[in-house]
Length: 441
Image (cartoon, rainbow, N blue to C red; front, side, top):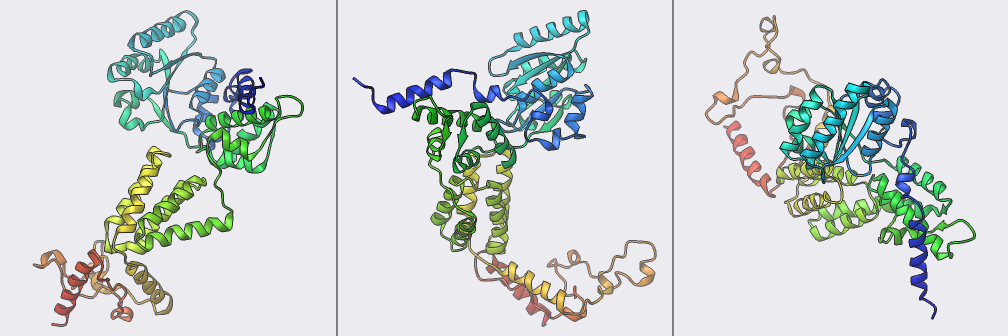
């Protein structure tokens, strides 16, 4: 009985994947110049490269998302400096393992004068006792620690150990770096690919070099299996890329990019939380830069909510910071919370309108001098010029406010900010009206 086509397809893919070391391992750089990304650390003259090339690297903690090259850099350091390399994983190693590494490093240094690098992956998984066991050896130079972590080391690494290490932040791989990795991967696999397949793999990489090479390897295996695994070189299609990622490609062109973003902003401005979440999900599925989305939310918080809900800007800013701290996919929740908060918040564009009015007056009206009572009176000689004379300190007044002019005469009567009756601005409007009534006596 002939096996089903799907079984043959899967068997051919599995056979190809099992025939060699993983693609990510085969493409692991052997020299600093082979590393893609991290130019802020590894470009000629940059700090980490200079320390490596001069063999003066101290103990370091490499902090960055998965697949950004932490393990690769540790191995390159060992190769470039000629030091012994001892790898440990904090997930499985204990204090006993650390002490054995320290003992070997001390023996190596004493007998051969050769120094040792301990590469400790997932260093944040070590408890306090395990991290403390490293301190003496790090302090006296018995070994050089290279710790790798995906978590914020200021929260997860003991302060004494962190203080004895130099922290380097690795960034997610950018589009050019991911593209370079895919080109190398295709060459190593002896394969070709459609442009949209490469774009789909790159879009879904999330800056993770190891993940994109793994996905490419699976896609090549699927392409080879589809053609029986023999004959011409495998050619990866969009379907292969989608199957490798188990995710349908959702893409849009440059024009539609602006249309989708416009729909996203207008949905939130229109207080439609469900629509805002839909467009957020669609942008994320299409590989839109999450930092771009976060920036748009921060802008919208002031542009379309403003003082109607002063916490809107705080929430949007917190979502943007959370994205930098934890990354995707987890930060999707932070972005979604900001979308819901902004969509359901009372709306006001009065800050936007007020700034436009003020800018127009600055451009069109004469630039009057700063009133003398508002001028800086703190420097030597200012008092003789009359600076600050007549200024009334608001905090000395019972209500914390005094009736005095704060603008040049040319624009003294101009009104820029007029609060709406929405949300917090209703209270702001009442306070402003009370002060205006008090001015009019």
